[in-house]
Structure formats: structure tokens, C-alpha cells
Amino acid sequence: MRKFDYSFLDNGLLPSNLVNTTGLIYSLKTGAEIRKDEYEKIFTELEKIAKVQSVKSSNEIEGIVTTDKRIKDIVNNKAEPLNHNEAEIAGYRDALNEIHLNYKTIEFNQNTILKLHEFLMSYTGAQDGGEYKQENNVILEINSEGNRKVRFRPTEAKDTPNAMEQLVLAYMDAKNNSNINDLLLIPCVILDFLCIHPFRDGNGRISRLLSLLLLYKSGFDVGKYISFEEQINKSKKYYYDALKKSSEGWENNENTYIPYIENFLSTLYMCYKELDKRFNVVNSKKITKKARVEATILNSLTAISKSEICDILPDVSPTTVEAVLGTMIKDKKIEIVGSGRKARYRKVR
Image (cartoon, rainbow, N blue to C red; front, side, top):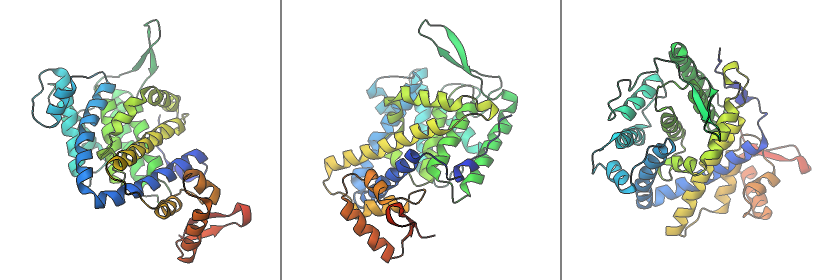
């Protein structure tokens, strides 16, 4: 029986590359928030573009396609769906709009998940929209010769409601633990959702919608301005490789979340980098190096060394890093752990 428990995220034994990537993301997030406050019009335009790209890419991953013009018209409510594919696209549009407009008040629970699925299926004529699967499903893979085989057997239909309840409760428990970073927790929850595979159809698209919901609620709203789904679609092979690696042994509690976390963080990082790039195209004002160094230290999961900060921010000189560290220590924002070459810095608790 699968056990849902994310307490391992609080053991301090996570790979260093995950710690470094989260530091990079927090640093880029700080810059994005400063810009968003000052350049609302630019971000409004980016949001319009990203919404179309998100609807297109999330459906395209599942083989659901139509012309770019039709997608744009459907997303902007200028056209009604003409076939089944377009009905699926319209459903994703409505679910995405629900998250964009109401994420602050939407709770992560079974009712929300079922409601999003109902949105997703609302134009297709499906009778099971907003309902968990009634029959067992399997995840297949096709080899180079066209032969199919079962790659993964998700949770059985009869056990799905309980598994979803345990998933939500485990998330709530971990969310209340201040030592567990949201950026590490969210991909674990999404992986477990995908392994449960609670719906007859639409599991992949719902997983991407839930990713956005949980990211937005945790303050990482870059997906509103740069399509998170498009970044997944661009590197779809790596996404599925990570999913395969992290789901092996899942049903017996023998899997590792690390490959999926790495892919998730990489995707989010690329969103922030793309936002940074697009913003600089239309506006030359950049966030100060001082602000980026501060964000890197204050948002690090563990105490961080000067050399690690320099690795995360290669365009910032060691002299600048030292100056910022000195100021932050003086202002009692951070404290030193160790001395000499082993000196590391962390936020004052």
C-alpha cells in the first residue's frame, strides 16, 4: 500500500544541486517581483501571450492540436470549439482562467481537483467530468517496433478516493512544516498525483494545472507570464524520462523523487530566465546585484558559503558578495556558521 509522507524533505540530506537551483530561482523571483510592481503594463501583455501558449502547449503534449489562430481565438473567447480537440482546448482555457483569477482563495483539496477536471471536460460531452475513474487504468509505452507494454500500473480505481485523500493530507502536513521548502514539496505532490492517475482521461493536463495552482499559492507566479507548460513541451523527452525514473517502485514506496524534482525545478528556472530575457528586450533596467545576492542568501535552504553564492551568481564579483555579506551581518539579517574556509551564512532565525 502506498504511503504518502514528505517528511524526508526535512532531513537536510538533499543533493547540493537542488539547493543551488532553488537559490537561483529565489534570486530570479525577487527580480521579477520588483519589476512587476514597476512595469504592470508589460506584465499584463506577457500574461496574455503566456495564456495562449499554456493552453496550446499543455494540450499539444497530449496530442490535442488545432491551428494557432483557432487556439488564440478560443482562448480569447472569440470562437466556439468546432470539434473534439477544440472542446478539450476550451476546457483547459476555463480551468486555467479559474486558477489565474482565484488561486489565492482556491484550496488544494479533492473538491478543487474534481472541479478543475469538470472544467477540463465541460465541452467534450464526457460523462465522467469531475469524477474519479471507475475502472483501473494503465500507463503504456510503445517500443521502436510499435509493440505496447505496461510501463506503470496506477492506483486501482477502488483505492483512488482514499489515495487522493491521503495525498492532500500529506501535503497539508508538510506545508505546515516551516523547514520544508515549497519548491521541493510541490513536485513530490505532483508526481504522486500522476502515479495515482485518478481520472480516466486528463491526468497530465490536470497535473500541470495543479502545478501552477500550488506554485502561485506559494508565491511563484512566473507561469502567468511565461508558459510553464511550454517549457515542459520544449523538453518533453527529459520530462518523461524524469517521470519514469521517479515512478519506478512507487507502488511499493521504493521510488526516488529526485529526478522529477530536478526536472520540475529546471523547468521553473527556465521560466524565470525566459522572463528575465523577454523583459530585458523591452526594458533595460535590471535588478541590482546587491538585491540578487541578498535574495540568494535569505532564500537558501541551508547555510551557504561565499563560493556557492559566486557559483549561483557568476556575473557578481567576489568583492561585491563580500561587501553584501558584511552589510547583512552588520544589519543582523544573517549569521555566520563556522569560520575560515568553512564559513557559511544563513538567515537569522
